[in-house]
Length: 381
Ligand SMILES: *Cc1c(COP(=O)(O)O)cnc(C)c1O
Image (cartoon, rainbow, N blue to C red; front, side, top):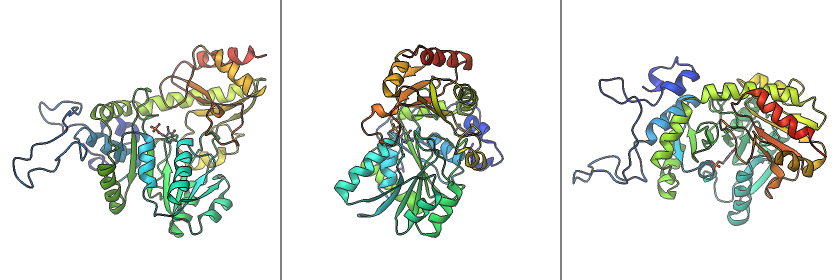
């Protein structure tokens, strides 16, 4: 069952129905996990297409087909060993000594890798505030690649993606969108004109904080072939079990995200009047600077919000230490709610406030989530 056969399916059907074995007698309902590093050649030079486990694995196919169906991509996604392997693959499309435009508040792993390429490979890096459309457009002039994230991590700034993607195309700048935060259920950048989309499937797609995996998508056969060849040669391939587990996670992604987002909206609203919270950042709040854009260009607001805790970094850390239900841990997109003061990481940009705590809202009961946070916040001082 491929999405191409049923283009009328809504995304919440695609997550369940895509990537299944054919509807014929005795087929399993789920795709099997194929644990094999090599494939029969039948002793013939052209004896098969699979050849070797670094080139392909049948367990990847249903996952790659399903992610592509969700993003509205005509070609299968490419699965990678991690989100960062997917990011590195997309960055490898840059020419030697090329110029990249990247938001100052991009995912810190992507920023660190770009900084490393700046030192070692002569990459020219232009940092921009992506919510400032004029500044972003100016930075595109003469660039080779625009790296786009919206909403940004962790500041949750919202870019005018349709305008930026159209302008980049006009200027001949290759666009890559890291769509991890939004997921294809809230935003489909290829449909808005992006050349390449990357995902950390570790987050919402896997959804249970038990797998690390990445994906890259492009509708361009030429770009996909370059990426595919490099994946084979660089070897950053996912294990079959991780691929299977990620597809299993995707089956419930629509339900999980709907619930987590409803929780996030409720928490953002309640926390915005809490005396120990100096600011809530969440595009779903009507007063948020990114609200109008997010409402216009996304199909929902996602389930990540950030709060700034009165009393600075120490008060924020103390609050995290008092949580009982929320888990103080990095990462996001799992069923369980996680909280993290992002500046605890040395690589986090200094423009991210010291007291900013990122909340990855899970699917628990919202009153329990709120009560735990409120208790931890109230106990300050
Ligand atoms: C986590 C994350 C990555 C990196 O993915 P890994 O699976 O941890 O390698 C890239 N981009 C974003 C936005 C992320 O949240």
